[in-house]
Image 1 (tube, rainbow, N blue to C red):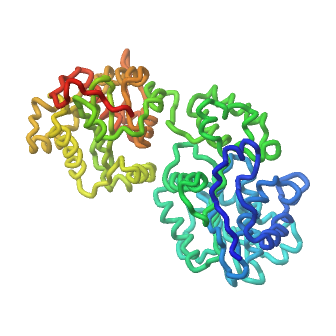
Image 2: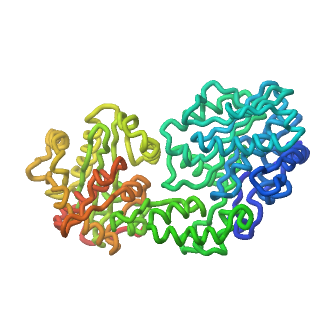
Image 3: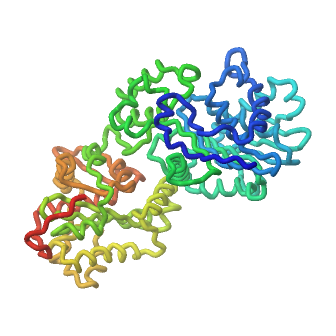
Length: 561
């Protein structure tokens, strides 16, 4: 009889606070789980005093995870009913030991001749961290030493009877194509999120699972020390949605040791009595005194170090990547978010609109900001978009995963031909103009790069002398920058809370020149800020209090959000 189960864990917040299991079901096939556990528990951990076995030294959550993986295999049909597993734990919670133990056990339990198992690590260093404990587990067991041949120079373990192999691959130095994978463990998924080709790489190395129904993929990771991006962002969101019941996928098991959002909002994640939540090994491989000291040191070193420490040791997701030289307005950006705020909402609710445009080089972004003054309340409502030429994905490989994420979000568009971005931005401007909402001097552009925009809008009937304003940059933008800070802090300027802008705002770096502050692309490096610069251009024009051109009845009252 096929067992029934759900991989959702709707009461995970209660469970994690109470230190209860996050896997909401028993092993689907107890006999398979028990057989694997007999091997797993007997493996010795070489880097712990006395070389204890996993069964002697690990905590119950480790055994539950192992049981879920091997207990999902139906021996009668040769099919594994749960094939993907996602485990996120904080740093120093024995992740390498778990990876080595599970994959060594899988090699021993495998029945397929010449079967292939892989651990895919993002770098050679991470690969070594996983291979060393696996090879040591074999070396410390006389029976395993006779059964498994270890070739350290190849990071390869070979089962002498079946010919099956377990190979640890460093993605930055070894090929991953042509694999006939049965079992794959992807270590430090957060680092793969920073690689432009990571999705293709994972697809290639996991391709063999299509013809191996007993196969599995395990994703192991800590939280990223930067806002999640690429494949990590995608997998993490999917795991959370399965856990929360938003997506029903009985073949995917998420196990996420992270704080409930409400605890982070009120600061309870900083209390030492709660450190156990992302650290199930607290008191064993993780020391609470060490965590307290690490946080104190980070607070002295600055906001960026605090964010990184919270991410790696407490699994707190990084939002805005704030540093000591961050723009002051970034501190108030999150609180001014309205998720329902779209371009359509601005056009329906506002009496006058200004537009800011910035950027547009081949390896740059073209950023656009629309700011409307809401009828009846006077609030400033903003919407942002951006375009990138396809060449930017190859020239800016360090940010390519993020750009592709923003494209999926619907906030950034990748264009094939130079000029497509300018035409698309002009389409939005004309849409505003046709509604009768665009201010008389309502289009603000960077004075150094207005040619293509002016040409395109002029061809559509926009008088550049009356409608387009060249906004001085550098120190001349100082007033708009400070105005934007005050508008955010005072609760006047609102935005849609989109990841694109959170990234751009977090990228902004401030320079002081005399009495002025400057935010420049040079100071921000390869990270993009064009939509934020477009915001300053739009703020410059809205600060002039442009006159509304009509379109609303006198008794209009805005709808309540």
